Length: 264
Ligand SMILES: [Zn+2]
Image (tube, rainbow, N blue to C red; front, top):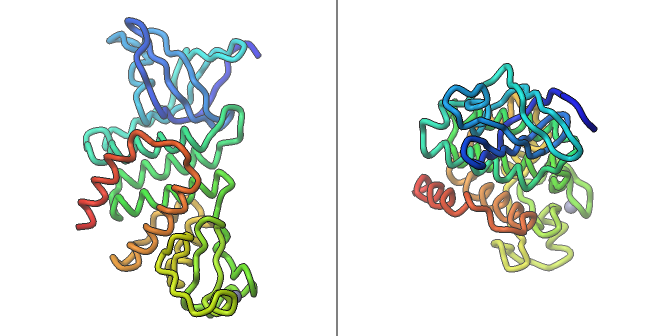
């Protein structure tokens, strides 16, 4: 494929190259995640200077040649400057981008991940719910878009969907069972997140996960949780995510310290 094409997407990463250029990672609606060269992007008057900044959402005109892309123009930019002036929000945003790098591929249909990232960056700016909650919502929906949503919609044994107050979340298998079915199979075990990855979750937590996986993006960040419920939800999503990410993420260590401090 050769020639100019227009791609709508978000800058996930941007590194300097040579004296004046940049290489950017772009998550696009049309081509999935691609790497593109932005010639002269570090020159003071370059039109690509702002366009190659982290988090920039825009319509990028790129020249495609074989398997490589060069950015030639950029329109309709949204910059998310309110994130970059706040160090804490910047770390969250960088983590979201790093996780998107992990969960997306070139030439795959990543429209849903673009929408998720855009909405999540907006939620960081708005800040109407705690940042650690925004993070957990983002993680679970990113996993779902990646095709790895846990089945939290019914008991894996009796298929019951409602009138259950407590569930056993089997984190390694990504399934839930009602407490009665679990008891019948394994006896009166109390799975306080034992070494087999079982976690006792109240219906509120199951419903929260269900909601995040299925909600339209515009209402994805429109709820809050009590501290007690958040702690269980955080554990459920955190452990489930760990089972699906098999490499260390650079931004994660710092973010875990920030979340820990927020929860004290
Ligand atoms: Zn059951």
